[in-house]
Length: 319
Image (cartoon, rainbow, N blue to C red; front, side):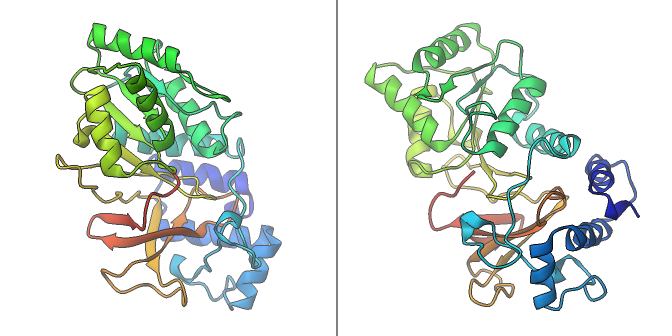
């Protein structure tokens, strides 16, 4: 069966994400569960302890959630982060089907300034992998990375921003909140402010840093990028997919939007039962793209369900 072979299953899921197959989410979710039950001993132990065997699991909600080690996942079934370059085509498909629609907004292939280290140097390998793919496939040839192991390369970033201010080409800045803050602080110390062309965007990929409101004010002042042009990205340890949300003109965060190949629930941290509507809890995600590790993950992010997605609560979260 295809579900017994992880490579074949990854190809099947990639085709589903591209809209090239008649498979349903539920069919693929059960296939992923059966595959991981057979292959991952610690996950099988967790499932057996909870009575969640292939003969008893009827849908994705019945699959036990596993917590990544970074989120306190010490029980059997704790998931390891997805490995790269395992199932490379699937990882590429996830990025290609989510990033352009959420972040480019019809920009085509804009010049991109990345403040994220290359994949092999990044502390968050998934984020570095995503940035590498964006630069290779979705960015103009004169895009660049202004981030090294020692930190933000301010002179390089300054030259890039000055060139875009001159040529008036809408630009995309890809960074974490922390690297954005470091760049803006460095420019401010030098008395520098840039006016990026209208239509420019910033993709802020989470992380620990200044508050949303503070960062939005500084982006408007330092780069002339308004709040509604700042896209937030969210993921968590162990997830392959990344969620995106934006802001309104007043700087209020909009919910992270659903992704067709994932399912998100908010769970009570004590019982792991689904939290009542409007109640905060831990964000759990079933990610079909997590073929290489546990697909049903319990994150350490606190959130609340929204009509068109979910919101995070309790401070900034990893991207």
